[in-house]
Image (cartoon, rainbow, N blue to C red; front, side):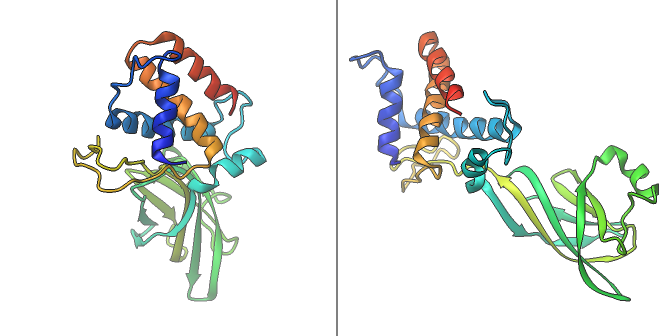
Length: 232
């Protein structure tokens, strides 16, 4: 869907019928509200706070709707003795999994099963024979801390490669010749929304709800918020 169409639809639903009461909403306000709505919609679908209580990949619709945000990429890891450390990408939104390939002098490289664990349980996990990193069983665990991933080895093996699969932030739209609300610079190109048109319709309702709340239009706020949630 073109940005021009998105703008028309937002103004149409924000205005009263056959009026131009709120046509003075500027393009940067529409961009900021739409990008905020994208993130709110994405987080709600991932967590499952919606009418049908579905989170990510809990139904065909959720898999289909969110697959555009799901990516896999290699991450560089540094040996920190008992764990390997890798940085979380800047566009990171939510964890999915990490694939780790380990090696040891005695054996060929193998793929490890990695469980996401709590940093608070680190000492217990390293001490527990059934849960600590084990090359023979091809199992280990990872934690998230300070925008980094720690893949634990307990000095039992080395990590040769690591790949992070995660949900990224939605791409922020930009409107040509409109001041970018995040940088203060005039946008030199259109950046279109990456979602399917049916999802964009829901995000438009979310956007109108945000703008209506900002200008204290209770009716539009309630109607568009209810519509966006009912159609998820």
